[in-house]
Length: 510
Image (cartoon, rainbow, N blue to C red; front, side, top):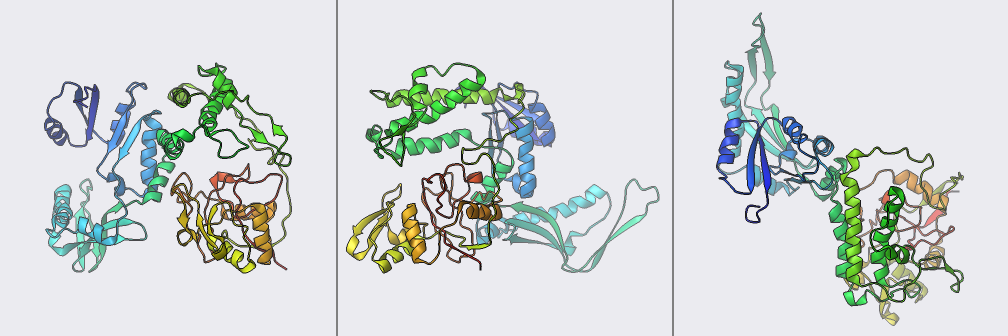
C-alpha cells in the first residue's frame, strides 16, 4: 500500500497494550499508511469501528486461524456480528481458516518433536497457581495429550491425570475461607482447547450462515463462462438457430436488471436506453408451431459491439452496488401478501397422490447405453457424440470438450422426454407425474445441501451413487418447479417442457 501510495489507516487490535505497542513499533513509519493501536476486546473493536463513516471502505483481517477456537455454529454467529454491526456492502473480511487435512498432517503440526506445543500448554498450569494466588495444582501430576476428532473435524488438547488426585482451593472473596475440593481420577482427561478445521463445504456454510457473500465473485463466475469459454469470434453466431446470437445473452442479464431497477426506483434506464429495448426479451418460438413466434424485443439490424455491451453491463452492476451502499438509509416497504410464482405455480392447487415407489437417483449414461445395446437402438442423446455407431461407441459432451464414456459412465444421462419414456417402458417402469415428483421433493429436499453440484462447483456432472439408497443432488433449469436450487430426478410431462430432462423410474405400490 505504501508503494502504491494508498492512503489507508491500519488498526491493530489486542488485549495487551505492551504487545500492541511492540508489534506496531516493529513495523516502522510510513508516509501513506497510518498505524493505530486499539487495546481491548473484539466487542471494543467493533464499537470503535462502528463510529467510522459509512462511506469508508473497510477490510477486516483475522488471520490467526482463531476461528477454529469456536464451534462451527458460534464461528458463524461471531462473523455475523461483524456483518451486522460494522460492515457495509463492499467491505471485505479476510479470515485465516485451517483446512481439514488428514490426521497425520494435523498431528505433525501440533505434536512437534521438540515438544514446544506441549510445553506451551503445560505452562498454563503454572499460571493457574499465579491466578489463584495459592498452590492449586502440580504440573508434574499431568501430561499433555492431543488427538484429532475425525467426526467433528477438530483437533483436541487435554491434560491427562497421571494419578488419582484432589485439588483444593479457597475462593478469594469467601469470608469463611471454605476449601473447595475437586476429585480427578487417573487417566482422566481435562479438555483445554479445540481447533476446528474446515473443508470446502463447511467453509461455504460458515459464510452462508454468517450472511456474507462475495457478489463480485459471483459475477466473475458468469464472466468466466461468457468471456473465456465462448470464443470471442463466436459471439455473433447462433448455436440454436431458433434463438438469438450469443451477444444477446450478455446484454440480456444487465438489461433485465436495469429495467427492474429503473421501474422500482422511478428513474431512467442506464444511459443507452436502446439496450433495454433490444435486450429485454429473447426470441421464443411456439414449439408446437414453429411458424409462430411469441412476443419479443425488436431485433436490431446490427447487434452492438461487444465492448459497448460489457461497458453497459459494468454500469448496471455499479448501479446495483450503489443501492446496496444506501440500504441502511432505506426502510423496506411492506411486501406483497401474494408470493411470487411462475404461471404454472399459481393459483395454488391440491392434489392427492397414491402411494408409490421411486428410484432415488437418475439413470446413468452407462445404463442408457446398455439399454441401447440390448434394444439395438441408435437414438442416442444429443449430449453424446457418436464415434462408431456399429459398436455403440460414444463420447459425452462437456464444456471442456468430449470425454470418453469410461469417464462419464456414472454421470446422469441427459435425455429428451421421448427417449426417457422409451427407457422407462423397456425397464417396465414409468416416469413420475408432477404430483409424485413434488411429493418426493417435499420428503427429501427440505435442506439446501451446499455440497451439491451447483454454482459451478465442478463445471461438469458428478457420479451418481449407485446404491439406490442415496438421493443424488443435481441441478436442472426448469420453469418454476424447483425450490431452493434443488434437483430434478425425473422427466415429467406437464404444461411445459423442462430444458434438461432426466429420468427416474417408479412403480405403484399395489
